[in-house]
Image (cartoon, rainbow, N blue to C red):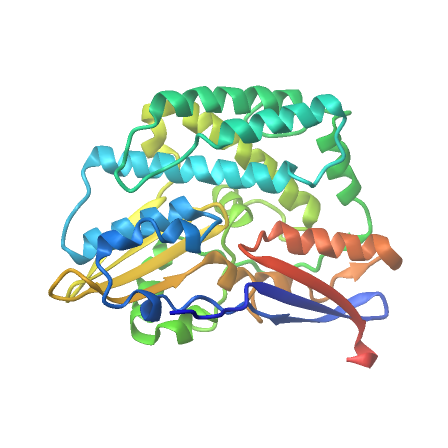
Length: 366
């Protein structure tokens, strides 16, 4: 079966007198997993998911395995859960590093060499459905990543880039007056929302997951949400510089967590959660790099897939009434390219799992 789907998000920013009057989002279309996988044996999907979801593939595998176990009424052993949590954290680190450093910064030869070493080390931070223990290789990789981060100017768990580093210069370039975000009342997705989300996903399927909301609320999920829930005193204005700093700090924290080994169970609540919803239906929530990911699986009497729904973080953050739109509307820009680049950095800070295009138009011409 060949099913086409649109793998890009179009963002159109409407400008009026130096401010953002409105934001229009044309979302991606998502693969119809029930149509693709109905009647398939559970085991046949393990090799397919990484090809279908090239970003956060580990998180999708963990969510699928956990949802299937819940549908069967099974509970994963403690060591298996620990390996899955470790793998999700490791992938989160890899995705953050790729987003921060690959093709983003102008680096000298030493900085470029550090990034190459870091990304080579990150390739070892993997996962497979058999729960193979990659512990020794992973620890060595984390040590290499930590050394590379230090070389790039990130030397502590707070993640503040060293003065004079390319990373510090990049943060400073965003921390100017080119973009002044409007103050909004934030709302964040957490594990406390899991059951409400999953009940809606089970009832409404793709109609809900294409444009999710919780009684009209469209919360933010991802790095900034995780930081804001840890540090509730953060300012309400969350511009591109603040969000970049949060990403750097999380990368540093993840390295520290992975080095801690057995202490991983205490790093965060709700990194991997599974739920039995009755009638051979199970679901899972995974806190991946871009935010909270949900899978819902129904099995038939022969242990084959009869229904498969998923909800990715991008659908919250790039919702037509979601956090990105709220964060941009009413913001004041400097004229010309500088202001537009600041908006591009703001959109990129929400880190969609697909490509995006960004267009600016005067509101009078909309």
